[in-house]
Image (cartoon, rainbow, N blue to C red; front, side, top):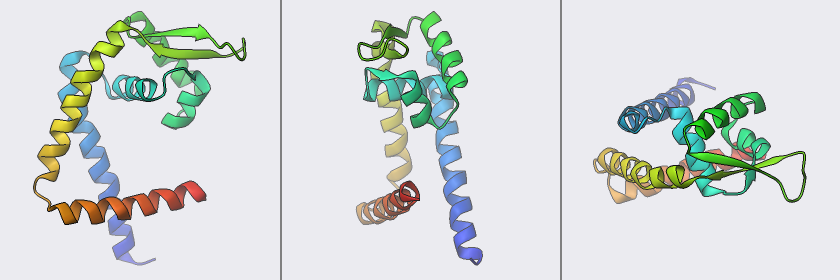
Amino acid sequence: MGLPQESFAGILHETARLWRTELDRRLRPLGLSQAKWRMLVHIACSDNCTQAELAARLGVEAPTVVGLLDRLTADGLVMRRESPHDRRSKTVHLCEGGRALMRPISEMAEDLSHELLTQLSAEEVTITTAALNKIRDRLLSL
């Protein structure tokens, strides 16, 4: 296609990257890298998930998840348990330390969203969200 679509994709990619980078900067004082906070959020949203499910949700390979979970376990933020349904797999859960971080992560993410979106009207946010949902849904159907 022509330049407008290429520009849209480029702007979308750059905006998402900048947004994650800024949130990463704000969460760094909590001792969280982007990889760590993203993993914690995914575990919190779907407690009792397997390492393989986490890898699929994060779009990374299983060995990457294992290494990251090793670090989060050493930090006292997550724990692994044998799956009650399949002893070959492990389920991942937040420890108290991980649960304690969810509120500041959520607040910092919400603050950043508010800060970035206040320059848009409610209608612009609604239209943009709807458009992005359509694009995401189309990608998921491919």
